[in-house]
Length: 604
Image 1 (cartoon, helix red, strand yellow):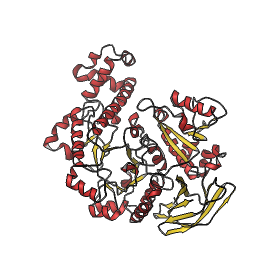
Image 2 (cartoon, rainbow, N blue to C red):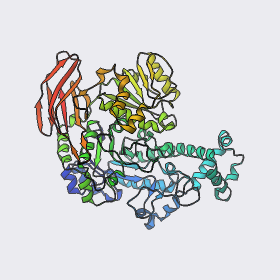
Image 3 (cartoon, one colour):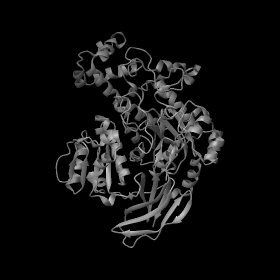
Image 4 (cartoon, one colour):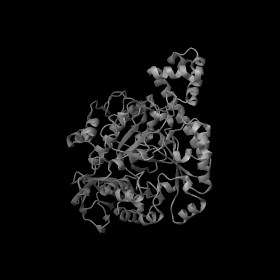
């Protein structure tokens, strides 16, 4: 087992060493500066059983780096806006000086990054993080300080036009040379005024930038035997207009880091919406999507960069505790202690609940139930990047479907399928046949390969349920729900809307784990001949930052063994006990006397 598939406990920002030991942190920093480490410090971390991650930004150049004499040349590698000014990154709210958007097409800038990674490998660092892999192209706008219009970007597009007559035709260009006059001023003028050309330009650069990053990942891997990760910033939920905010980055790396946020409306549509807390604001859909990338490794998630600041002055420690527990229940890893731009004591007091220490000890003692577990689920949710890139709202439809299924107790797997722009879209027919039903939240933009695979699966006896208009075709095995039930549930979060989402699954009762309390969710795994149920109480009260303890929680799950189980072993912070159970009508039931707020049932 690769180490990153094993249980890890992660601080978002590096903790002081004594705190890291106190909490039992194994990776001290999801975002750590490579200059903080030398060989002796790395060796000491390894002796203490920890891994070391370092982070470099592929998009942003901060003053603490460009103000050094040896890095002054990088200021010439910054990108430019469509008016010729320096491009900047606007979300470094804690930095009083400009943070410039670097042109990732710049070889000197990539060499600068590579030198830092090479040094990290030489001193024994375990994990290399490529932060902001979307590059400067994902920041492209025609507003002042937007990115994507420096001479490198403009010339690369001109080279593309020179080599592609069809592209020249679409651009209405007879002479590429004319676009280069006066420092590309004719091209810049057209990009400012011509929407069609601008969209063609942006689409070209999205593909070109992804290819450059893909090549760069190869260069990074060539430095030595290290684990490569990246911060994918929302796992596809960006709506800035660039396809580079899609989920495809997870296909390039060993596992993903992600800053996640839960908003009712897509980010960017109405400023920066407030983050919704639990029980509504679950991240379970993101964990399952991330672990469906080709490496199938657990994802490391943490609340998005603005969330701690939005929650400033409010008590949210039990919120962070529940987020931590949700991650491990859903085969993920959670980066707590995360709030940039504040002092260490403020960060700890707001985002690192003391109870996490107890759960770290609990998870460590029972790590066999957090590593190497499998599912035997009947339902599969397809995340089709092709459809989401065509309709970004499709990402929120996926999250709504994932949440409605989980809250109704339906056990399901997620499979990522690409887009044929950045990653292949082909679906494996053998994989599909393992499931009784395949659900697609957004299906209007499926590729030909995806549509044909789903149609063949339905013809073979499977069920396809698409929650949007589509071109999969007809047939008895295909159901199309062309209404807005997913987005209605996402926006309003009502019980009747949730019921409408899962209504088509009434025939799949054997895919469902029921509980006697609506806000208690169960995730069901298999480990050899054992059934493992992670039981989590989501009844978080935002007003006073409490979790309402549940008593006499009945858990009822499908059971195929007519002889019944030998034992139901319940494990929680309160200790371990054997629970009575009964088998009736193909289902097994047991009762947890007190759920406060999490525990594991192991059934054998």
